[in-house]
Every structure is written in structure tokens, then in C-alpha cells.
Length: 553
Image (cartoon, rainbow, N blue to C red; front, side):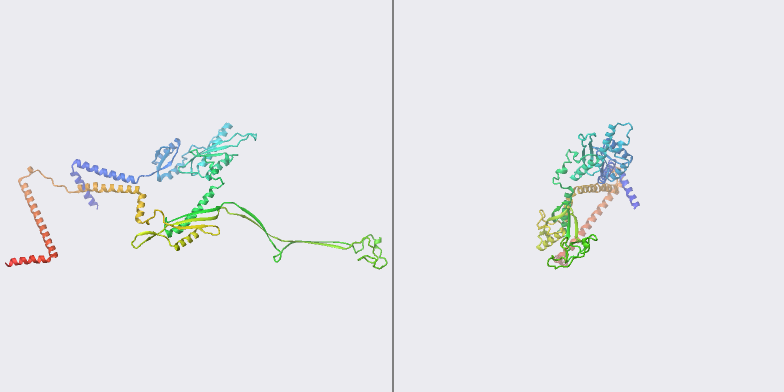
């Protein structure tokens, strides 16, 4: 192989040296143009894309960053607006390397102002530096949000006074510069407001004002967007719940109907009320229920005549009873010989208190937030594609049995609950614009229409390369590798012998050409006779018979 290449290069060099100077110059220009076009096409296709490294930089930070990039031997581009671009594959690496050097420093300062505090600074200067430090720290905290590009915080802190009536509350103003295409919802704005409010003593939430770069008041949207006290997180949760049910329905029906042939919408009614319930219940424990005695108390009292001896010894009361008399004149229940003075009838009182254990159930229930109260789903299914015997594609409606199966699948996917009040409606209808099922050709056309710029670019490059290969380089190589033509000498410089030799050579060449032509004509005639004999043997037989009859005569 190397020997063949060496011979090829030698032949090209020999052919190039045999050319005239103007031809050599033209060939060199053509080869240089072809090489330049090929290199340009390669560079065009493989050009390094650049990506923004930093934007909206100050002059000081921009100069420091460009100097650091030069030291790191990194190519960069400077654009208007303080934009520095570097190769896309090096963006993140360069950002980390610059961050290790503390770049960009930025114009916002925080408590760094208090590091180099002088000893004899006045109280006013100290208060101003402290306020600037708080403003800078708050701005840095707000800029850490993904949607915020830059932030400025202004604090209005009144001077303290000993008189309560004259004491004023501080206020704050926040100016936000949002990234392109980014917006802040009510929850994020409320977070910024509460961040500023909690960072300054005695700063109420209502005294914090948030404005974007276009002058739009954002802090008022916290209550204006939710007049009913709705939480944006609840609304986001509602959207996520509905989107989840839609994905479930489409995922279960796409294997049956095909992709892009199912459209579903779900409306969920959620209960975000926070309710707490406390209840006490008592269970009766009378028979036949089991009983348990907690405590029992008994009290007994007796009132009436005392039958035992009483009183002072030796007194009249200790005297024996008198003579017995007839009990006719005595009251009932009195002994014989006793008088009615100081006697009362006997009485008794008894109290028994029994305390039983009573069953008591105390229940404290907190209802979950965001429970589903009702679901409403609407599903539209496109006609199914069918192919007839002739290979023609068309759409056909689903049968009632198939629709019933689809309805059951949707119910299972969404967790259909009829007592809860859920509703479901499945409709089979042709989609607008869907006349024929999309085949391979349609997919290719759609892909080509979507990527026509890239396809045009690749085709143009291929055409340029083919033209250079077959239109410039190949003819040049063929011309340079062709054997050189013998140089013709003028006729006056030829001798008689040479002239005779040339004439003889010409005559011989002409005879050879005539012989070759005669041979070719004979071959053509012979082939024509063979074809005639094969196609029409009767005519050939007649010709041969005529030849024989002439010879006999």
C-alpha cells in the first residue's frame, strides 16, 4: 500500500510539473478553495456553542472576571449589558472556579461593614452602617430565590422615643428584579414579606411593600388574589389531584385506544375545612350489663324511749314500779304502773349509698384537610382505526360492549364512589382533523417538518462536499494522473526518413482500423443471419433451395 501511494504521488507530481504555469496556478487555487470550503463546513457543523456565564455585571466585577478568565486561558465573549459568555461545556466548571476566588463580588454588602468599624465612630454612623448591613443581608437572602435575579431592600426605622404615643412602627420596601419569564405566586410573595417582617423588630406585615422591576405592586396580590382566604398551596394541591386522576385515566386507556386518542378531564371537589370534634359517651351498666361498685356508704339512726336505766343514781327514776293496776286506763304500749310523762314512741332511720362505676368514652377527632367530597370525570375516546381487505385505513366506532369495558376501567382507575356523588361520562366520537390513521410516512413528514432547518443544513453540507469531491478534486486528480501526450514536432524539423516512418505508421494504422471495421461488420452480419434463421427458418430454407437450384443449372 505505501508503494502504491508513493507511485500515485509521483505520478501526480510528474503531471503537475508538466502543466503550464497558469494551469498550475489554477489547480492550486481550486485545491485551496476546496480545502477551505471543507474546513469551513466542518467548523460550521462543529462550532463551539457559547453560553452566558454572568450577566448584569458591574464594571468592577466584569474586569475582575475577564482578568481571571485570561489567567485560566479560557475563551470568552463580551456582549452588551455586562454579559460574559464562555463555551457551553465549561460554564459550570468556570463558575465554581470563580466562586472559589470570590467572584463576582457584587455590589450588595452585608455585615461586612461592621468588620472594620473604627473606634471613634459616632452613634449616627454606627446606626446607618447597621441599617445598611441589615438591608444588604435581606437583599442577599431574597436573591437566593430561583425566580429573583436581583433585590434591593429599603428600611425606614424611626428613632426610638420614651413617649409611647409618639412611637412609630418601622416600614420596609423591597424592589425585585425577576428573571426572564419568571413570576411569583402569592405564597412566594407572602414568604418574602414575612422574611422582611421577622428580620426587623416591631415591623408589622402590613408595613412591608414589594414591587417588581416593572413597578407592579406585588404585596397587594396576597389578599387580592384570594379574597376568600384561599391558600395558593391548596389550589396547587387541587390541580395536582385533578392532574393525577387525568394521568391515571389516560394511562389505562392508551394501550387500548392508542396514544393521543384519549382526552380526559377531572373536576375534584375537596374539603379544606379544618374541623376538630370532642365527644363524651356513657354506656348504661344496668342489668344485664356488668356492674362494678366503686364505693358504698351506710348510715342508721334510732329515735325513741330508752329501755335501759338512766339518770342519777338514787333519784326517783330509779324507784321500782308501783302496784300493778288494770291496763284499762293506760295508753297502749305503756307498762303497768308507768306514767305518760317523758315517754315517746320508738323510730329508726337507715341510709345506704352505693356508687357504681360508669363507662365513659372521650373521643377527640381532627378531620383531615383536603379530603375528596366528589369527583366528576369526562372522557372522550376517538374512533378506533381499522384496515379493510384492500388495505385502506379508516375509523370505526366502538361497540357497546367495548364502551362498557372502557367505562368500567375508568371507574376503577378514578376510584368511582356512587354514594359520594361521583359522576362519569364516557363518549366515543371522532376527533376533529383525524381523517386517516397516521402511518410511517406521516410520522416521517411530521419529523421532517419539525426539523427542517437541521435537515436543510445537513443536505447543503452534503451537496457541497459531493461537488468538491466529484466536480473539483476528482477531475483534477484524473487530469494530473493521465499519461502525458507525445509532443508533436514541427514538420520542417522532421527528416525524410522520419516523415516516411510517420506516413507508414499512419498507413498501417488506417489498414488496421479498416480491418477492424470489416471484422466488426462480418460479425454483425453473422449475428443477423443467426437471428433470422432462428426467427424465420422457412425463408432461410427457401434461400438455400434457390442457391442449390442455381448451382444445378
